[in-house]
Length: 169
Image (cartoon, rainbow, N blue to C red; front, side, top):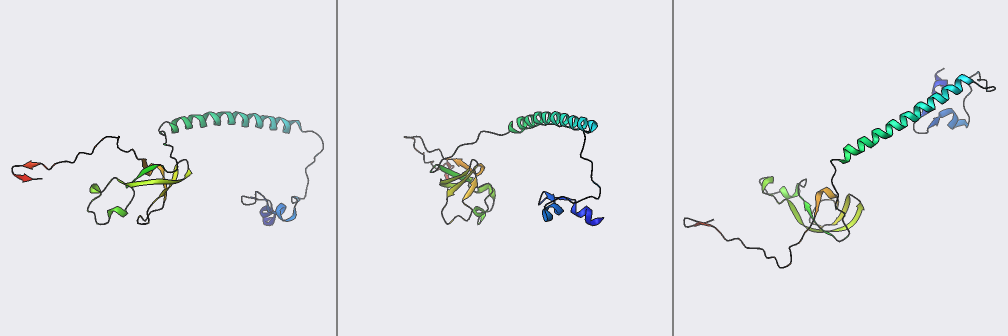
C-alpha cells in the first residue's frame, strides 16, 4: 500500500508520477474504470467547474488591476540613464567614508562624479569607479543622481570669513 502511494504521487521536481517517470506508463490500480458510454452527470460537473473557473479568472483579473493601480500610485518616474552620463553616488548606505570620521552628520552626502559604464537593467547601472573605492561597480539607480553642472557664466562665490568683535570665524 505504501509503495502504491509513493508511486502515485506527483513530485514538484519532475511534475509527473515517479512510476510514469521510471516506466513510461501509469501504474495499474487493479480495477479499471469503464471508459465506454457517456456520463451526463460528469459532463455537467465539468461544464459547471469550467464556468466557475472562468468567473474566478475574471474576478482575479479585476483584483490584479486594482492592486497594480494602488501599488503604482506611490512609484515615481525613473530617470533614464545613458552610457557616459555623469552621476554622483549617494553615501547613504556606504560605510567606507566613515573611517576616521566622528559622526555621519559631518560626512558628504554624495561622492565625486562618475560615468555610467553600462546599463545592466532599467533600474541598475554599472559605474566607472576608481580602484580606491572598495564597492561593487553595479548599483541601483536609487543610489545615484544625475549630475547637473553649473550654468555657463556662473561663478562660485568664495565666502569671506566673518569678523565678530575682533575675532575671525
